[in-house]
Length: 506
Image (cartoon, rainbow, N blue to C red; front, top):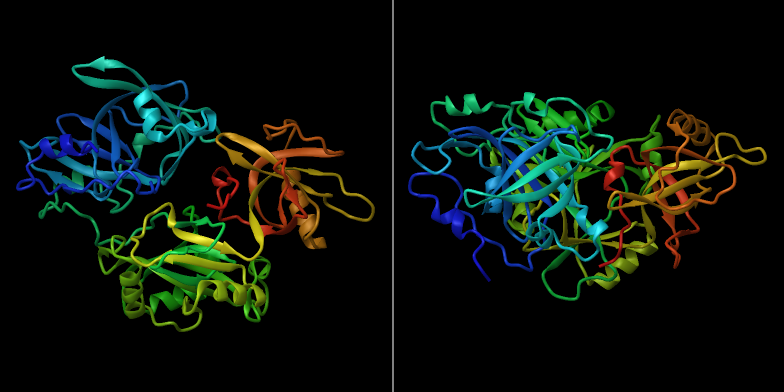
């Protein structure tokens, strides 16, 4: 295997620059789908756009930065692949060194390869080598689709153009007017003028995209796995810097106003800087109930069940193993209501799963004990479900019949690349309050055009903008890709509709 970082290493003197040396992951390492854009004040200002692919980060220098306007084509010059560690680099590269100047993390998050949706079987690496790829980006500043196309070579470097796709996030807003780092809130000028010229910014705890589990057809058979209870609630990243505490959804939406008791409990912990990962749940006896959490009201107590730590006391701990992170978590968190630590379950996985299903749990999460924490979906975390369920995008509704009000059934689907595929209608699981409230929400989003890429032949169908996500339980998928016996379990305001895809067991 050729060393994809050879050019990167050859251009740098690591005795002078504090840029990360980094190591290449093996080809079979799962790509965690992260991206970063770094504002780089070198000889000329430019923006380095990097995507995680096959254990390294292919990179492009974009002189004018990304544009949200589909009519604007940005020059993007492909540079050498960078190590994964580089996505956290922020600081000053010494003058005289390659790329000398100040660097800040202008944006970061996750991306989804949508090239393969249009050309099945095409890997991200193959698409780059072929000279064209498209990605859907979920960052803190960048959202939506972009396409990259190679146009030729100049001075020995591949020239590309970067173009915004025409989607709901397209606009004529100048994205580069936002100049502050998403991890330290500093500008490149402030980094360059800092007395100690810091090269790693870990002192300020910041939100990071969570690690996501893949749906598994069966439990792992090899050794080295641990198991936790699968909870049915709202995924929550908790960030604390001194007295300042924030609760964020998996898509960086704020939860602060909904759960002030949890914020108070986190503020009382001895550790005063951290980023924690967990699930906010409501208990119905010994079971977690998403419907109860969503309805809220008197007597409903929300609990933050914590199962991982990403940053602690100014240092990232993502590179540590799961077992090492759990040890730190036990030392940092005092489990006093309304916060708890999720237990690691003891026993044989078959017996654990059978017991979980008998007790009405949603299932188990299997986690590889030696795995680091990656900010994207990973096969090192696997969902073992007792019942079939997943999130689906609402694209329309049908007329109510009889005495029913609001609507008859929801028309739902999932994304396959940029296409919203129709998955069937959901007509059960609603109470009167939900029918009226959700019916109004749907009407407010009404449109004359179906958002589905497939024909939908349902009597009395109406269409809406695909902006709402529903949690749906069902028995199985039919052969033609529709839900069998679906039931509505609640809305998922914490989920971005564009990230909803059909979950397939691995």
